[in-house]
Length: 86
Image 1: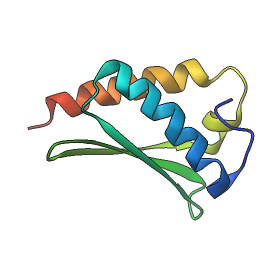
Image 2: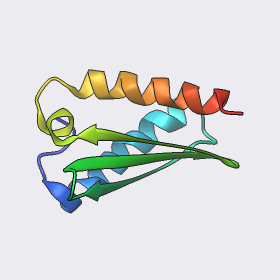
Image 3: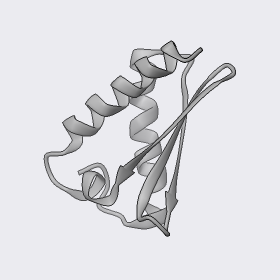
């Protein structure tokens, strides 16, 4: 479970978690997280120089026990995708 908080209240915790992982993989990557109430998803924005990659985590991914490794793998894969953007 990435956060026991819901909605907008969970976004800062998820952002802190994502920034820690991103800094281990590539210190130049910045991460922002916001909650989209219409879709009940967390929007993660990865930024490196002029490159931006946006993806989402569902509430179930964030709030379900034992899904943190899945989220970490996804985040790592998306950081690598950001490297390959032209």
